[in-house]
Length: 137
Image (tube, rainbow, N blue to C red; front, side):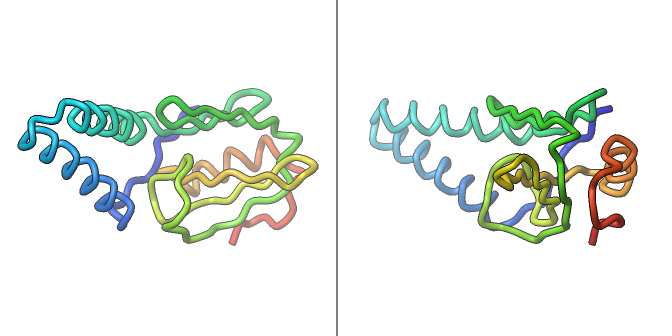
């Protein structure tokens, strides 16, 4: 099952868009091909992330992806999920309203923001009965 990321236009969207725009405008106006190329590359990677961020609930694992980045987490390793609000961290979430999924022996975590959050959590619960703290708060 696939879930798109929820999108909101937080300060990170505006700041990154502003940086890319400044690089592109400065590169074109100053006839600086290096700055223009850097701006174009940043814009392409940013939009690649925006349009490809999503979450796959597979048979044995959760796969999260965003642009060129991908992470697969075995359901048996997930120990905790909680709702968080975070505008600082990037990663696999495109919204301030996120789910923090804690997994592994070292308490690693990943932040995600599925568009249909309640449906996602319901499906994840079926695959991860070991998770403490249902319902997620």
